[in-house]
Image (cartoon, one colour):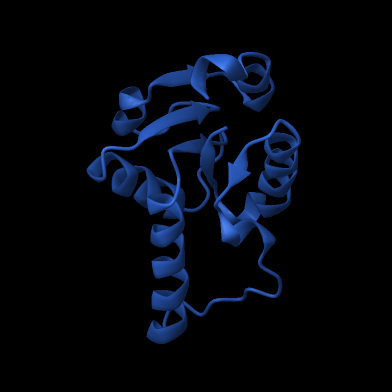
Amino acid sequence: MSKIYIAAPFKRQAFAANVAKYLVAKGHRVTSRWISATNVELDFHSKAPCLAESHKDLFDIDAADFVLVLTVPEPIGAGHHVEVGYAIGKGKRFVVAGPIKSVFHHMASHHYLDVEEAFMRIEEWT
């Protein structure tokens, strides 16, 4: 089965963790360690911890076959957009589940209105 990195706004960590549980139950491996991180309160002015977290995320994307991007209608966070750019730069396939929020989202191999639709059609993108 596939190795999948889940990219989403950090404020959606609990939702992303539930998505990961579903994917694991379907036999996939989720490489996103950020979704199980606890007590992560990053001060964006503290360089060392931010670098450590960002390098972990990039390593986890490298370990994945492709990236599942969970977008939301409201404008929150930007890290998942950086992760999409990194995935594109690495030649990784990616899937968007949610609204298109960037011109780069049109480069996705598949786009679904929400994660429920993506799950119903999981065989198309895994």
